[in-house]
Image (tube, rainbow, N blue to C red; front, side):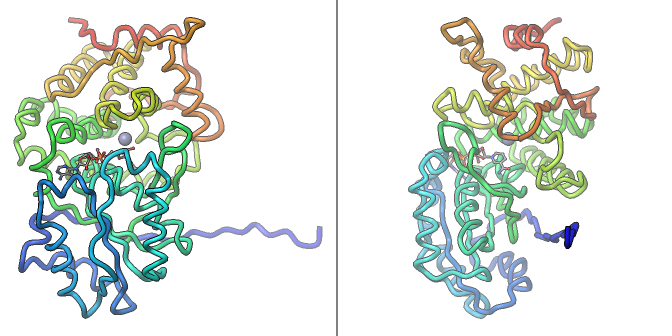
Length: 387
Ligand SMILES: NC(=O)c1ccc[n+]([C@@H]2O[C@H](COP(=O)([O-])OP(=O)(O)OC[C@H]3O[C@@H](n4cnc5c(N)ncnc54)[C@H](O)[C@@H]3O)[C@@H](O)[C@H]2O)c1
Ligand SMILES: [Zn+2]
């Protein structure tokens, strides 16, 4: 051995996460206030990719974005008009769509100091973020999330992804954003299904991290279903804060170690999404995943059956699904198909299987072995309320 180094590096990432309203309204200067001080090379070339699901609700959005950003010519140079991209899981399922984002970044000669704006739901943020992360080994991505789920969870985190080989997020990168700006006004136009999807992730993080927040969610479930905006804004912001705290304080932002607490309920959610041909939304699948894992935790005695029932009832009161016919689909040999999700999750995470369960409300238990009989019981009994 002529030389032996233990190389250690700790790259530092810092990004502002802002909640606001009316980001593109004339006179609003949030974009400038958040971004200008962080841009060293002026004017920074920029491209904007916009979720096409927004366009029917906001017919003048493309013009408003272009107008707003062109007015910032002191520090930003819009390289082209905003570019629409397919919204929802469609974009994550088709690598050609991702490559078209890569192509645009190269065609307009963006560099590592340029800004790529992604405006839309979690799927568009994941897909555009992934494309940006591989161009020149990483362009700066500014996320403008427009759904409850992306404002309260996916948009504020450090991951990108797309679906290949029929699996969820089989390709992706850890690539922290340059900034995240959430405009709460976008939430008003979401369909009922997507309005409530983000609430499932809020329940997820509340059950394992914050019992007071769980109380709030259970109390306000009917308001959330009735589209009470003030309550939803509180839910989204508190959920975002808990996700940010986890990523900042866990000591494992890039998920190298065992156990990913934010994946509570997700081994099953990802499987249900792919079994449904991605017709089931991520949030709906998470809700069913939570119910099954809460049932398993209650059967194991890690939480009480009445704690489990309270959450199941609240999820249902919000309008989230608490069961799915997919749970009891079987292979020819009689084995439940969803159980394949355990092996797929282990492969995705790497190393041995580690599942996340609550250990009492607000605490986490890492579990390395699954009792398949109990799990099957949980899958059968997921929707039942015991009292
Ligand atoms: N990267 C992460 O850490 C992470 C975490 C959680 C979830 N995710 C991913 O996020 C995705 C789900 O995101 P989502 O729940 O935002 O759904 P989505 O991105 O699929 O968007 C839902 C639908 O709403 C439309 N839409 C977006 N904004 C709208 C608005 N303001 N008004 C009306 N329609 C609007 C979209 O076009 C789409 O059809 C999944 O792919 C999931 O895997 C990623
Ligand atoms: Zn999720």
